[in-house]
Amino acid sequence: MTGDTSVGASRKPAAGVVGGTVAAAAEEPSAELPGDVRPVLLLPPVLSGRLSPARSTAVAARTGIALGVGITILFVTGLISHLIQHPPDWFWWPAHPVWLYRVTQGVHVTVGVMMIPLLLVKLWSVYPRFFAKPSVRRALPEALERASVAVLLGAVLFQIVTGLFNTAQFYPWKFFFTTTHHAMAYVAFGAVVVHLAVKLPVVRQALSRPVSEPEEAPRAGVSRRAVLAAAGLGAVVAGLAVAGQSAPFLRWVSLLAPRSGQGPQGVPINRTAAAAAVTETARSPHYALSVKVGGRERSFSRADLEALPQYDSVLPIACVEGWSATGHWSGVRLRDLLAQVGEYGGGDVRFVSLETTGIYGSSVLPHTHVVDASTLIALRLGGEDLALDHGYPCRLIAPNRPGVLQTKWLKSIEELS
Ligand code: HEM
Ligand SMILES: Nc1nc2c(c(=O)[nH]1)N[C@H]1C(S)=C(S)[C@@H](COP(=O)(O)O)O[C@H]1N2
Ligand SMILES: [Mo]
Image 1 (cartoon, helix red, strand yellow):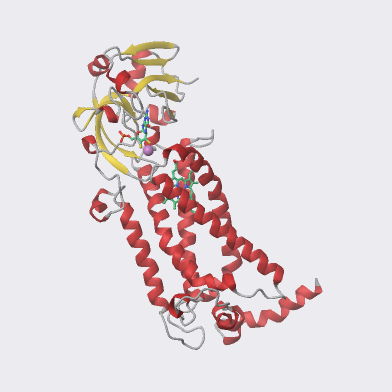
Image 2 (cartoon, helix red, strand yellow; image 1 turned 45 degrees about the vertical axis):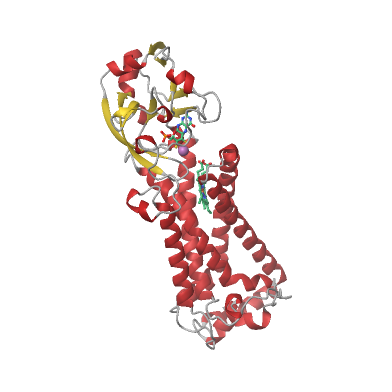
């Protein structure tokens, strides 16, 4: 203990000289770089950063903050998506604004893609330190710090890769991806919090000086401003490349947004009727929708549904993969349909599809959305009968929820007790 205290005491005055040369020499990694870095990789000087003042705490701190903010946004928006799909008792999600989930999940995937250039620049600005000779005096804290950085980096890379796979529709493994992506989110977010706590003094010091101010004698090479500008521009370009799949006015610049408005009736299709093996049953003349509520049951043909009062709803399909599209739906209000059968007791309602394969054949709708006037058993989209691929003879369309819960090709609707 006495040893620790004396080390702390002897370092204190140095750290207290904010912006002074002593503090800078003690804290700045760049001050240690030239001597300490092993020339492991034979990169050109500018790339390896040996000649660059850009590889500095100033850049590491600023890109680090951007990444930290991004990961926090990803953590929150990701958890929202998880909670809507697997709601615990305490969770409540509103029906309005109808576009809220479209925004949170669009932000999740767009910010997720923006992480890629930011992470590359961050890694570039710090990577010589991965090869720095460990100091003997601080062996344990340094080993712990490196281990925590390894966890952070691994978790964030894992999230980016699994997230991208997910948006690219690797459906056979999607369930596995979502589960691991969810578990790793806590690791990634936790590691960010730990890393920031460890680095807070260095970050505060780096931010207290302008980017252009030298931390030591100026060297040739890329400037910090240029690297930070490249990181920012890279993030914006990456974001724009995908943002158009959720924001229609950005579609013309979104070269990487694969599902942005194509598809029958102006709305993309994730799973076709053929893929879901429902082409026969959905077109069958004997089709009937079974509705169970308040202990009573009734069947409705498509003609029966058409004979009930029809309403319009403008609601988005907002896929968990980040793409979304507004649809002009019309059909029977769910609450009206339930009232046709029996007295709705206020519980959750389960929707089951004609589809018997796959894991998207059913969904559960909470009370808030059941009674909402915009929730429809849709018969039409864009003024025409629903395309077979959009869920003909009828589908659920409810406000402010993931597309995966908007069950197509309905077979039955049942209030859960
Ligand atoms: C540190 C970064 C990230 C964190 C903390 C994070 C967190 C989360 C969480 C907690 C979920 C909910 C999972 C569930 O429903 O169980 C989620 C879902 C999702 N994330 Fe991320 N994520 C990150 C990065 C990314 C990236 C980079 C992308 C894509 C570019 C991405 C795409 C997705 C997608 C598509 C889903 C929906 C999965 C589904 O419900 O099927 N994520 N994320
Ligand atoms: N029965 C069934 N309903 C489903 C699906 C499915 O695979 N099977 N896919 C869901 C998903 S993931 C989305 S995003 C929406 C897409 O609806 P759309 O194909 O009409 O655009 O339908 C949902 N409803
Ligand atoms: Mo989806």
